[in-house]
Structures are given as C-alpha cells and as structure tokens.
Length: 101
Image (cartoon, rainbow, N blue to C red; front, side, top):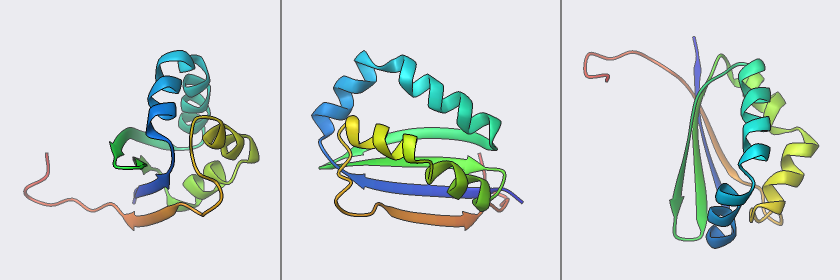
C-alpha cells in the first residue's frame, strides 16, 4: 500500500518562487532521485509564509529516507525554507474510495 505525505515548511515564499524560475535544474535533480527511491506523485502549494509538499510514495520509509538526505535539507534552506524549526510532516496510508478521482 502506498503512502501519502504532506510536508509543511515555513519560509520565504518570494525566494521559493524565484528559485522555481531560476533553479529548475536543481529541482529536476531531486525529482529524479525521488522517483528512483519510490516517489509516485509530487505537487507544491504555497500559502502565507509556507510551502506545502503533497506526495505519494511507495511507502513511508522510502519518503523518510529521501527527506532525511542532508543534501536535500541544504537545498531546502537555499530556496527559502526555514530550517530553524522542523517541518510539519504528516504520513498516511493511501486508501481507495468510491469518490476518488
């Protein structure tokens, strides 16, 4: 059974938006690494002072192994993530339902 992951990272949203425009190759590098480790789906959302990451992974352990990579943590800080406080991470079992789309 796959896992849904929701990660909320506080930070500088302007800096994050700029990084998306200017550092796409670095985002793509982490995308390929995530896929190779079990990532199935990935989306970003932006709120007031935070970035929300919504993913589906083959399992929660694969996500945690990927997310704990020190290189990824350095990248998160460099694109505006506030690493002075830990992100809010929610891990759940993905389930099917009749209203799924």
